[in-house]
Image: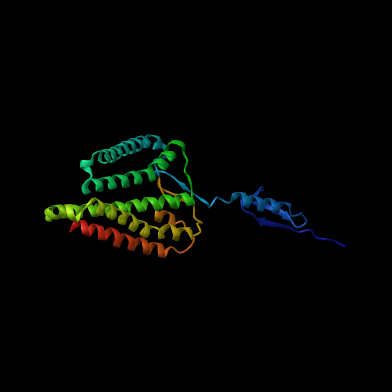
Length: 254
């Protein structure tokens, strides 16, 4: 009796611990199969985090770029803190216009603090990884601050309108308490409009390269890495820009 021994030539992925074209005998045990599956498991990337590349194409100059970033951040922080301190210290400055300037300073501090520290970590220490939760949190605060800042600028335009067109009634129309309530309304509006964005993205599964070509997490940059349908995200962000920012700019222009 003659028993034929067949050799099967199998094309295996390069992740396996043997050559790409190898001769695999059916008489061999499953040892190589186990090794290949182990290699596949080791090759899975971490989908629970993103990679912020910084400024694409200028990676070699990140250390130099960090200098103006750091200087502008510190100068802007000191200027806004000084405005807050002076207005809070001098009672004569407790007027609607100066309270609005303080609100605007708070939004500038919040916006720069949401972006610059992480950017400096990328430039100085090459800490490019950020968790999905951290990315969505940064995106939420950044967009909330942007929408709040737009609403505060609109409120400042209304303040100037009342001061110019109704100067005798200015003190009764725009009191400090009413300005504080308007500031709270601006913040609440921003939170309610922006909150759906991270909630929608948190339901998505990310399967792309998970590389964001920015120094911060942007909504559309994160949405494009999703495996699912992001049509709702696109429609919502379009409506958000059209309704919120369009309304604010129209009021300011009028």
